[in-house]
Each structure stands twice: as structure tokens, then as C-alpha cells.
Image 1 (spheres, rainbow, N blue to C red):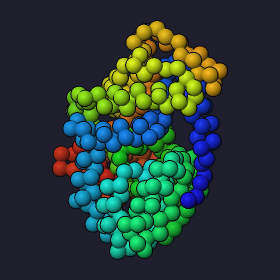
Image 2 (cartoon, rainbow, N blue to C red):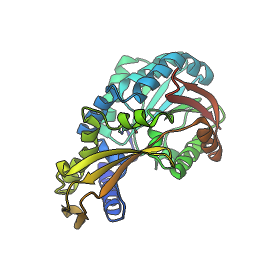
Image 3 (cartoon, rainbow, N blue to C red):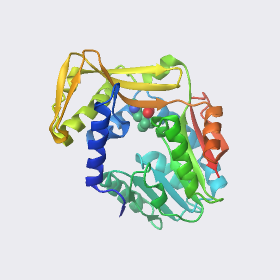
Length: 315
Ligand code: AVJ
């Protein structure tokens, strides 16, 4: 396993993000810290919720189009950024089996990667599986190259980035690509506000627990004394930026201690911490952002209801 990121680097990044995010107003925390073991389980549970359509829709598009993707790319190397749950990966690997020789899953969590990569190697004899522990927002230039690469960034995770970050991320991917390479990008689409909000504020409260779990992560990793129950889950649609915002709202005035940072954080009653943005796209916005990053959308697919998109970007 190649490592560009040690547990120590991750700890440092968490300390910096929490110190920065909780000492500004409005307070913010980056969405990437949701995903400890518990958070990853909760996210898996979210993907099975009635209200949470993106995973199901993306899977449907892949089921329909995997053959076309294989034909259009002839990929020899598949690099997956944020190597996710097995199923979508497996659909791609199966479709690409005629040409594919190497699979490179990239993730910040070595434990998770090791397990997932081992399973995939076992199920695909003859495929070289080369997991890389890295932060795809920082280490793109260091990732292994390869012949006819398909870089997959699925799930709609690009929506967690603000517009300027998206363009620099796409530019950084583009900078690693040669003419025969392609980027397979999953992006959620703008739709009815009601459905969007319900997808991020489900009736059973799984998303609320997922949101509050970031406080458990900070308690465990930085010795803080957040009581997650003292924060309420909030999901709102921001029509100007066309993104969902998840927030945690303090239910009372309170002070939280973070010993590792030697920090005391005060919350007013009703004060909110923004924990995630999840941008929703229109084709023209993606065209523009891809263009600004020196890429173009070569193929564009959606599910029959137009809920979610998969696109194939090229230099
Ligand atoms: C994994 C980032 C795509 O934004 O929809 C699910 C995470 N947050 N419910 C998303 C998430 C709340 C998800 N992504």
C-alpha cells in the first residue's frame, strides 16, 4: 500500500480544521470529518433510506451505462477517488474487465482501504490492486499514472466543495490527465426543494445522527466535551448557491472545551455550525466549471427522472 498520508498528518489536519472552523463566525467544520467508523456506517445506512435518492440513482445510471463507459474509455487503469462502498466499484470493474489491468483505490483511511482492496483482489484474479492512502484534495499530482486511465469520482462528493474548490480540484485532476484519460464524475442535480431537504433530513433521524457524529469524532480525537444531544440537526436549501447546507444548532448557551487545542468555544442559544454543503448541479454549471478547469464534458448521462448525473470529462 502506498502512503502519502499518515495517521499523524490526519490528526494535524483535524486539529487545524477544528481550530480554524470554530474560531470564526459563522462557525464551520469540513464535511470530511464525518467519516470515522461509526460515521461511515451511518452514511451506509443513509444510502438505504427511502428519502436519500442519490446512491440509488447513480447505481441505476451505472447499471444502464457501464458498457458504454467501458467502450468510450477502454480503460486499462481505474483510479477511484474516495474509494467507496463495493457495489458501484464492482459494476465498473465488471464492465471494464475486457481492458482493465490495474485498480487504484484512493482513500484517507488505510484500514478501510486495506480491507476493501483485499476483497476486490480476491474477487478479481489477474487484476493488480494498488491501494493508495492519500487525500485527493492534496496529493493528486503524486498518484500513480498509467495507460488509458479512468479516474472515477462518484457519489456526488464533488458537491461538498465550494465552486472555487471544485474548479481547482478539476484542474488538478486535469493536470494529471493525458489525451486518452477520462474522469467519470457523479453529480447530484437541482430538483424540487422538498425532495432535496427530505434527503438530508430523513424521518428516522439517521442523517441527524450522522451530522452530530462529527462532534463524537472531535470528542474522541481532541479530548473535547461536546454533548452531541445539545445540538440539533438542521438541513436547508440555499437557492442562491444551489446547495444543501447541513448545520448543527446549539439548543442552549454553552461552552465546549477542547483540551488538545487549548481552546474554549462559546455557543449562543440557536447558534449554528455549518458542517456540510452538498451542491446540486445543472448541466450548464458543470459545463462551465469543467471548462474553467480545462476539461470538457464528452458524455452526459442521467437517470430517467433526471435526478442524478454521471459525466465523462476529458482534457
Ligand atoms: C457522500 C458527500 C455525497 O452530500 O449527499 C449524505 C454525504 N450528507 N447525507 C451527500 C451526505 C448527508 C453525501 N456525499
